[in-house]
Amino acid sequence: MDRQEQIEILLDHYENPRHRHPIDPNDVAMPGGNPGCGDVITIYLNVGEEGTTISDVSFEGEGCTISQAGASILLEMIHDEGWTIEDVVNLDYHVMMDILGTDIVKTRPKCATLALGTLKAAIKKYHRDRMKEEAGLLDDLDKVNEEYGIVTGDEASRSEG
Amino acid sequence: MTTNIEERGYANPDVLVSTDWVAQHKDDTSIRIMESDEDVLLYELGHVPNAVKVDWHEDLQDQLIRDFIGPEGFASLMSRFGVTPDTTIVLYGDKNNWWAAYAYWFFKHMGHDNLKIMDGGRVKWEAENRELTRAVPSFEQSNYPVPTPRPELRVFMADVLEHIGYKDRQKAGEGKPLVDVRSPGEYSGEMTHMPDYPQEGALRGGHIEGARNIPWGKAVNEDGTFKTADELKELYQSQGINPDDEIVVYCRIGERSSHSWFVLHELLGYPKVTNYDGSWTEWGNVVGVPIER
Image (tube, rainbow over all chains, first blue to last red):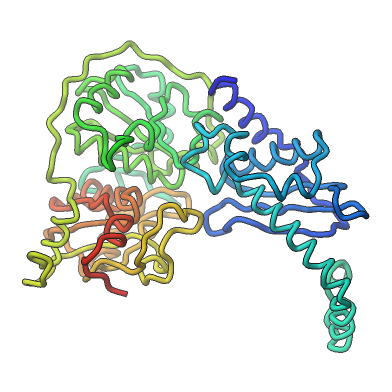
């Protein structure tokens, strides 16, 4: 594929992003990037019951062409090729840049890998939450929150207004 | 509401043109419209009709040493765009014209005089729903003569040391005005790089001794257009920066300071303003130079 074709793919994903919507309910909603510079992204992740497959993943975000096209391309690959959690964890940031076209994105490595880095962070949070759940920590947390009248998650959204 | 450019009291109002002006002149082959962006694919997404792309990284920088392309490279670039020394070049871009100002300063340093910036940049053009195209124009190759650069617009680290009163790395006298145009967090040393630019950081945070912090963004209105001359003079003079001073501006790699250089040297007509493009990515990494926090 030549440079121009690669650019056309990036522009197409920027203008027609795939899997760009929230997922509710989700196992993890992970924000990434830095709002101060304009590139922001939120990854929504649902993991299969066995904990190794991705049952659904999507994103929302705003920012430069590369950060947003990069998110769309990554999520399309995950959906179309049926990536597992392990596939994402093992994906090297340099490979992500190769997928987008290293020649085009070489001056913006952070933008090119924003979605991947955020998705990896979402998976890390998923694993951490499961570990806490197995250790009974989440139950304790819910009890303490209830005691103090703190409402979190979906309950909090419903209580707005 | 933003006033007309000619009503803002600039010393050199001709260096700025409105989006209206560009829309009226976009088909004029005696001018060359150039887009220079931070977002590397923004031009490809759509640009002002007949605009060419100037990639600050690939077109203006020497890839083997940290420096700009030389006079031969500049002549070759201009020839590629069919530009002659008489061609009027109109620059615009994203990020409040940071890279447009960077190209403007560099082109002027290379001796090209007929330069203008589109007030408000790409954001204003888009906000006004003006035409954008993906058609890349081609112009007949010209034969731009190899220019003689103007050294008086650019300073290097050694010049800045002397400017702040150092000789042989020892304090030897009073410093002259220096403007750090970065964000307060970068100036104070709290941050060693801009948000999202970790590859352009420095080993030490802080600012050059004696520098005043006047962030570049204070020179523009919400819509990205430049403030009036009175507002700009007040901004700088309230920080002790006066018209006849020898002033050095710097930032991180020289693009935001090009924007402030444009304000001081071009819009306000302060005659002795130079840009230290080595900026904090050089100063903050060099052994043995003084830093303040």
